[in-house]
Length: 148
Image (cartoon, rainbow, N blue to C red; front, top):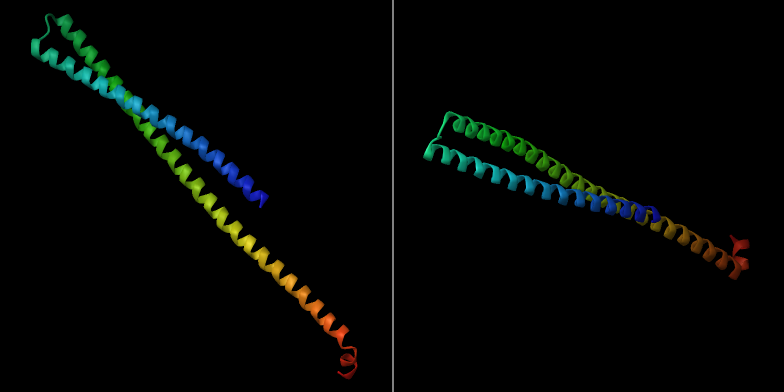
């Protein structure tokens, strides 16, 4: 059973580490979502300002469009990082589920092993009791052995 406790402790520590990683990945994904939302809002505000008032000069127009292109590129990069964070979080969740399943399998297998050992011990003890009972009966009736 000592082996079981070591395995359970190891699985527990691994699940805590995975849960910590999962929590940090979720936090990272939330921050990326917030950044992406903020950038998209800024992009829409800039687009609206550009179409509402119109640029004063060609240079202003080029500056605004390059800023929009930069925002668009940053938003796409953030969307890619967000997707990566979500994928990592899903992988971490799957790893935690696998560890829990593995731990449960070990628990069942070790339960079966403990039951098998218990039954073997009971059989062996019962055999010893039966052997002692036979010896006791033989000791109590010394003439019975000679008649049979």
